[in-house]
Length: 119
Image 1 (spheres, rainbow, N blue to C red):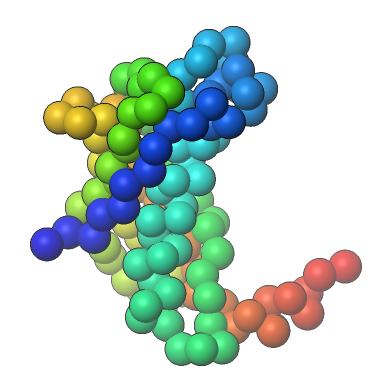
Image 2: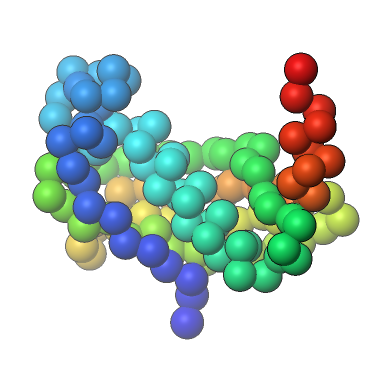
């Protein structure tokens, strides 16, 4: 079974509400958050207590609109790991309709070490 997570499009997640457009449809920035959250939650189950993951890259094709109330399912299709990061291929669906696809990469960091870099 592929890792998945389902979200509901609320009025706060529309393009008009977040300022990325003028319509009451799922905003691309909100979709990015859904994708990152799905990948983050997947990794949190696998990491040590002192580790977390941070998003470092996303390539997203948002190809179909979704209305308020829609249930968006993010499905992680493939997961690849290298020395410094973990890459995900994903698809997002509104019911049976594919609304987005792409890739997302996250770096695994030691939380305290990462926070020590703040200015």
